[in-house]
Amino acid sequence: MQAPEDLFRNLIPAYDMDKDARRQRHRLVLEAYAKQFRKDFTNFLKLRAKELVSKGRMVVSLVVRRSDVTATKFSYLSRTISQILSVMVSEGVIDKEKFDSFYVPVYEPSSKEVRETIEEEGSFSIKEMQVHDPTTDMNNALSTPSKFVNLLRALCEPILVQHFGDVMYEFVSAAERHWSLEGNLLGPYAMLAISLAKA
Image (cartoon, rainbow, N blue to C red):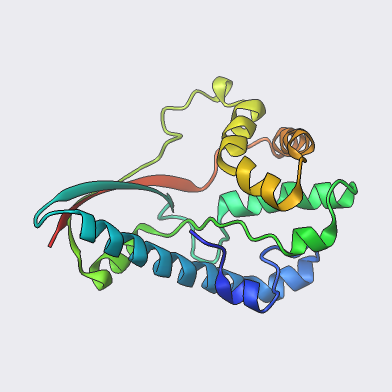
């Protein structure tokens, strides 16, 4: 997924350090991320449809919002990364202008949004959709801040280094502090597995 073009083009930060500004722009930012997801996921489906033979199948796995999380909530991953980076700005590790121009290319759609996008695009029929909470069987003793930081680093290091330079040591340190203070390491997300057949 790309960063939302509407935000980037209009120089609207995805996550503003000012709480009032962030609250005012919240709906606009959410809509921009949802629109970008639909565009990118539609493109993904069209390209995969070109690669598959008629009736060919594929399984897609996505991180989605849990059904009990309202659409007004921002992406857990994006919000977490932005909070960690805002701490790094306040500590002088990264420049505020660079922070304001950084858009985390992540959106956690609802399973309904995914279904609607697949149906609107039309190249595939949905054979099965299953939502799984990856934290159901997770042992809380094994859910340490360093495990989550390593996962976050694996996901984000290339885009963070490309945008901010060599700041991963500081990012890891700020992330560990963030999760140590937050206490709850389990986010409001689930995994969606979809079995698709080319129409």
